[in-house]
Length: 251
Image (cartoon, rainbow, N blue to C red):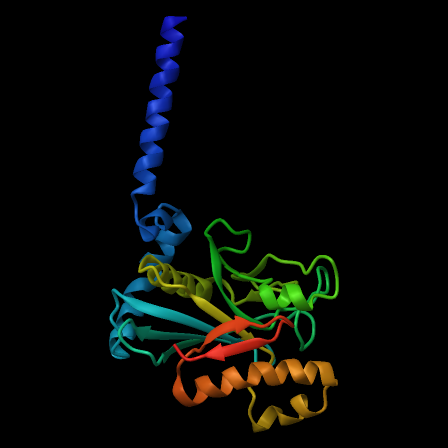
């Protein structure tokens, strides 16, 4: 009996030691324990570092901001130095499959891709779709504006090219984006990911003018943030009022 207790205690101490050593690792080091992430770094990090340097971005300490446009099928990766306010476009990625229609996600099972202001809330290196970055849907606005008891969830930016409400960009592009997101997160940065129905420009004016009043009001709310970023390349702080509408403030 005493011998068995010693074995159990030894195993417990070993498990605690492993857990503590893992907790002492940086976020990046934890991610690199996964073979998919390790391969993504081996394939893309050197090229991405060169691209960051070309954009005059500190490759060791930068912020990442993601913008998605559903109509255009484009995901933009923007970066900035910690000491700067304005972002620089680093790279565009093609969204390779679409789900639902233009307009926000309002309930579980509607097949819609959300529209609004989010951040990357989880990293999933073992995703069934190669690698995945979880979008923080539903946010406070989504909860207030949902049309059902369950607004849904588990919205991802991921690899492969299938989707029911997610944002797929195929495997190689998600490897690049995932590496950039790990680097930003490793420097204690939130990775914001804003999703728009379309670019609020002259080409899409009819989409905004000819939609239902409720949807038009929602889109005009998004439009004010879009226009500010287009002119200043600064992402405003986002809050939500009691009705679920977005409000924006300068940092």
